[in-house]
Length: 235
Image (cartoon, rainbow, N blue to C red; front, side):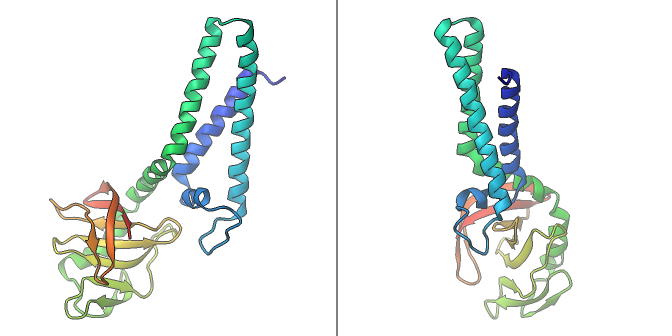
């Protein structure tokens, strides 16, 4: 029989791997939200599902082995070693519950860390727009051609060729400008789906209605440095 120490090592490694996966993989939330048989343009590939299923099986099997081993010993006597093992297993189960409940928060914080390293790229797009916001359709070196809405006094630039950040996982599809001077970049791509926003001092992300009359209700916002925020809206 496999030694208990090795079973513990396998189980804890599985727990750490899944937690790290949630924070590092931009497609983790897409994977856990959609079944593998519901194929769509944004669906994840099967290799991720196979890896995820394998980790879940390892976790369930190793936990069952630990519980079975402990239950046999508890029937004999309730000693300090058994109490320590009970506490250890209870702690591990609590950690699994925390991972299941807070996996979206873990993924959000992982995305925040990735965008901290992208601030310079975002700044290169926004810097020319702070002092000279376009008044009509045109083209900019950092963004390419765009259409400006609404006509006359535009607050939204719809980019016709979405520029990619260096990672090639994030694209900018539209840019919004608020009355307080904040500039918001709508993100698409593998690591997109949210907004990167630059705010002047005393300005913070809030719910807003875009230049195309599309409402955006603030869900979450986190600072990523130098006046920038990563923001999620319920549109």
